[in-house]
Image (cartoon, rainbow, N blue to C red; front, side, top):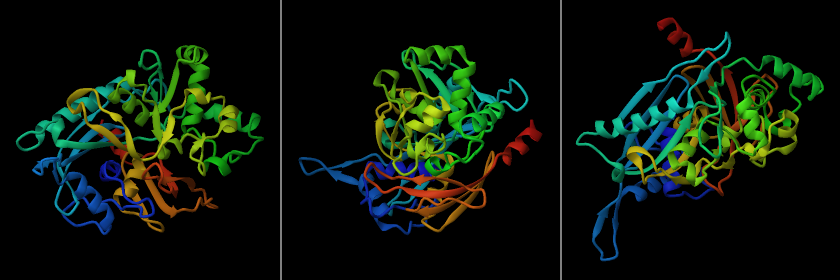
Length: 384
């Protein structure tokens, strides 16, 4: 998935023709099969001539933030001559799992942000001979999906711990919404968003926070509330509160229950039915474009140019074009099948979701997904 985040960031740094969706390069010294993607990366990182005709060395590293359920990692890739991203240095830190009640799971958003800054600085130090921001062309983000953060637009501070994707506190809320809003049909919104109502998705977590957290409720009444998944939170913090960056990419937005898969915009009727104010939601952007320039930490001055949810990034990193699937084993276990341009509704319980959209004007790709919540998390629980 870090390969996918780096690939998206590199694609935005030097856009590729939208008709040719690039596959991610392999993690070792094996050239990618997609020549246009290779050329895009090579051009963005090769010797460039200045106005006087002399050559200046452009930055040759691409960074990827991997913010997962149990840890945060930052990795630096060297862009080698044929466009392959070669892992160079990384740093990883676990963060605290907070369990207020059985079935509940929370994370401290400020701890995640602080760990991100530390991982970036430590990875730069781990580069043989050292590296600085001037050596890094761009950075991409991949993140745990659905995990929901609420913060104040005015102060930039969290209003509650992040409610994690596997948290079950919204079980009763899902039941009541199914009965009272959805006419007893848990799939009432599936035609629009591709998802059934479930504790898994961000929309019901947002509604729970509005109903149960006084600070979130007050912020909403004062138009001071910002909702987002972890990608939104990190971009907001890294670019700086004063910049007013409040965005999310299409893959993360597709996991809220609130986005129309076909338009890739918030679906007002669904948001209204779930009781979530769209004015608190981030602007939806593509997976490969410049979202802003980092203003904090060791990479100040470097543009953020790529963003995908973790499973979508893994699908891109595994070069899964239409008709190909990947299965990855981490905190949970996730299978994604790229269905290309087609929004496919499963008859066997799979979720319909975005695969990616690699650029503002690029065509979207869609996917079917099967999810298992606990895989590596069970091993970690036994360890701890």
